[in-house]
Length: 304
Image (cartoon, rainbow, N blue to C red; front, side, top):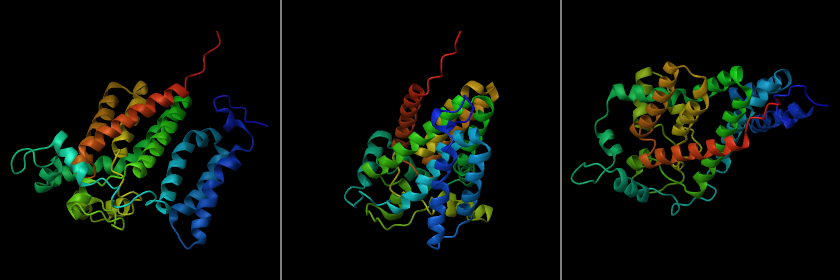
């Protein structure tokens, strides 16, 4: 027996779909809770996901790839050092490449990076401005998904599955080409320590101090991939958002979408989280994943 909604893909119309698709979002939190890992989001997921699966199948099917990314990300802490060794992590060789391609003059002729220059001359106003996309990108992705859900379910699926593919490609790259971010170099130099703690970086730490909360420290301080600078998924998300919502946006909203993506590119460098190289690779990954998923999600031909 199947759901009668023709907009759903075949697998989501099958009667067992809610049971099978919701199961990981119950079993995984239940296992973590049984190990003594009590977090409010685990209990929320266990209650919300099955409820959505059985009462709003179309919305659940559309958002499923985003939920799978969250599940995958949470599980990656158990394999974060798989395939990594101090010799395989790209740190000062990546910085050398950054200087060769995008170097600036700090003490003479290009001998430093934009990050060196920025960290030597911090600006509180820029800290706050660049914290905006870094603090809101997850909400922007969810907002874009709900926006597309109300306008075009086919493109919602295309958007969320591209989001899924982007993240899988990024996570795989983190293990095939582990790379340290600029903040790690500024904190530790060229010494790779696989046991090093994740950090939000000095700029976002100043924003936390300004706000009087530990939002960024809590969010980025428990990152699963310290050596996952390449590609910049921070840059990929708003770029994907702009590309997939473009056809439905008015001119002012298109300007906002482009400005948001551009600010994220600037913020990734300014906040010391990514090299310029990472930003370029992140944009390339986005273009490749969008092209691949658009081939797979061709809109069905309408019968004459």
